[in-house]
Structures are given as structure tokens and as C-alpha cells.
Image (cartoon, helix red, strand yellow):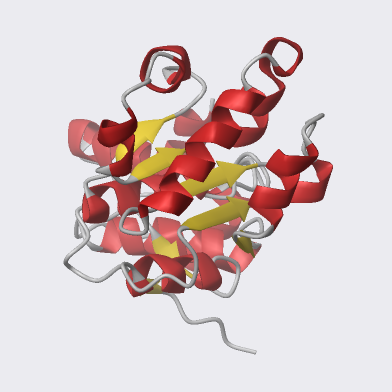
Length: 225
């Protein structure tokens, strides 16, 4: 069956996200905001499936405050202003990492945070994780219960066709042609992830401008090396 690839609507600032049946449900949920069925939405999938891109797309759309494993001690743990929390949209990326951090030291903080958002009735929380709710390393039944009662969406790894389309579409928008043989060569040699496909496409864009050369196996080999 043919897999259609489309760009995000122009109102999104991030142009690096493409939609397929692997991530369509997450895409539709972002498009549906602010008419979400629940105040909390929880997406999960492998580390490289594009969850962080979805989080950043919704951050741009909702003016949400973005939290991940790099900044959560500053932005989440130190946040005690109830009114401030209630009056903002929030994104908690790397939720499974944060919940299990230092023997679940901060999971109660996450639970309180979710409860505050749920009672605000006007703001939303988007969570992203590598694990489905029932597999989270949490000792708090209330926390897993709250997350399980959210709108839960799985994001699957991109397949070969989607990776090819990501690279091809990115380059075509920059007037760079790449043939099927070269695409096959790349796909067989890069990690099967959204991030890797975008990374190699950007490298081709940069190096083709610098070297002013055609896209062939010799050129691609130099990039991969």
C-alpha cells in the first residue's frame, strides 16, 4: 500500500517533521489542540522515533514550557508556584527518565504536577516517554493511574520508505536532486531513525554547497565516513 508523506501545516514553525502512518495519531492530536479529549496527552515510542520533534511542534503551537532530562531539575523540580503552573501549557519530554531518576526521587513531584494541570481545566500537559504507562519504573500507583487515564498514543519507528521520503523531501526543497540508487545506498548505511535521516540530509545539503558536486556514491561515502 502506498504510504503518503505530507508536511506539517504552515502554521507550525518546525519544517522538519513528516507524517506517515507511523506517527499519524500523534500528528492528528497536535492538530486537534486545544480541543483535546483529556488535559494530559502521553506519547511513547523508541528513542529515535520523533517524539521530541512532536513535543517541540506543540511547544511552538501552544507556547508551552518545555522540560526534558537536561533541564528538569531547574524547570520542574524548582517550580512551586501553583498559579504559574496552572496558567501555562507544559511539555515533559523524557518522562520515563525523570520519573525513575535517583530511585524515583521526583515521581511525587510529577504526580502533583499532573494533578495541578488536570484541575486547572484550561491548560494542557504533553508527556513523552520511551515506555507505555504500565511499564514505567514507578512505585506510585496513583502516578501510573493518572498517566494511564490520559490520552495515550504510540509512535512507531520510521520504516525504510519514510526515511527515504524524509531525505528526498528535505533535499528537494533545497533544489538538490538525489536518485533512488543513492537513497538506497544511504538507507542501508544509516541508523533507522528520524534523527539520522534528517542529519544526513542536512549534511548532504551543506557539503554539496561547499564542494559543488553531484550526489553520487563517492560523495555519499565521504559524508558517511
